[in-house]
Image (cartoon, rainbow, N blue to C red; front, side):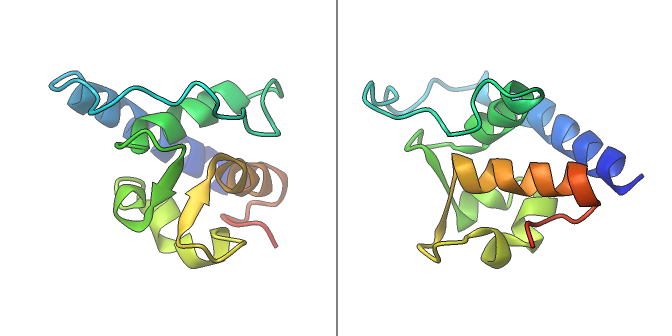
Length: 110
């Protein structure tokens, strides 16, 4: 049940961010040398990465605390999800949060 609510919130947020991003073009192109997250290609990963990429307003491949505010469930757990404590969520850290939710019902990896 909790996983369903979390994924539903993420999907709603993704739609909202997609509509908002249609109003303006990205500030700059994504860097071509960016490495794909380690979970790329796993079931459900593309949808999760789509949410991550829409929230990544400056397209730097990571979510700042301000960018994470667009995703309330992520924002609430930001410090716990930021496993390397660098003040940003990488795509891998973001994917870990969704995998933990799907596996245990927890909103952050334990």
